[in-house]
Image (cartoon, rainbow, N blue to C red; front, side, top):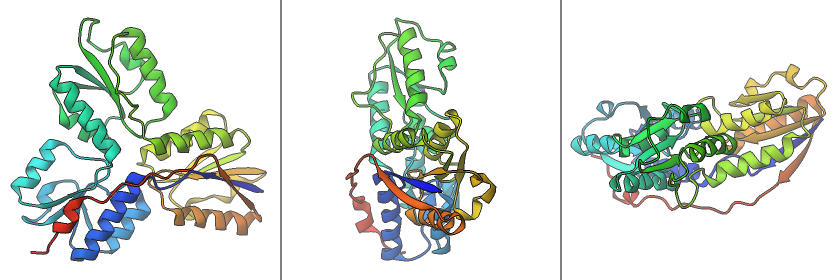
Length: 311
């Protein structure tokens, strides 16, 4: 068996920044730090921080007054920031700067009286945060079929934005439908889909054509990881999204000559290597790292970290 190890894979700059941010907060003040939602959508990462005393919460009422709270990489709405101020929380914003870019675009379009069409997945943390920036101006859609149901006319001021972790193909199909119905619709100057999401999808597209099986390391609630799995499945390749080697089933690989392994942008490299070790020991697999693009993006840690203190 030959394993093609996709590169780029795994942590993107935004995830790296969020995780380094939480690591540094723990180093400065110890345990007892709270995070609004999961810091990133990955079980391994969340479990590691939970063991270190970090508490992940879905309501700010779970955070004691004056406590330390990190906002996750997915971003939050202005309402969450307001409640945090009311509770006098020490907040550190670990929002990915590429998500912040979408938030700022939403605010700008709303201030200019546009009706904003957001392409994304309902209920995703990033979408909730973005919609919270201009709730009266944003309409969420997911599919090209949703475009036909929109109530707007050609005389309305319209603009679209996208969730950063969408499938490029999926988003393109919706955008084509939007432009066909609303030729005058405004778009962001630079596309919203994250560079890392695009790079990981391109790598899988290039490698999966010769694959018998695709393994994506990532959690079930990770949007960008699911999109990678869907690329393989859409091309008729048996494709599996797993958190680690413990979820691999040997029967998946029976008769397989070529296996492509990749990881979503929130999956750590350690789970990739455990998967590779499993395939090497169980199937005597040879590993070939396939680099399709180099990534050199880095985001600085937020300045609020320097002001953290225990009460």
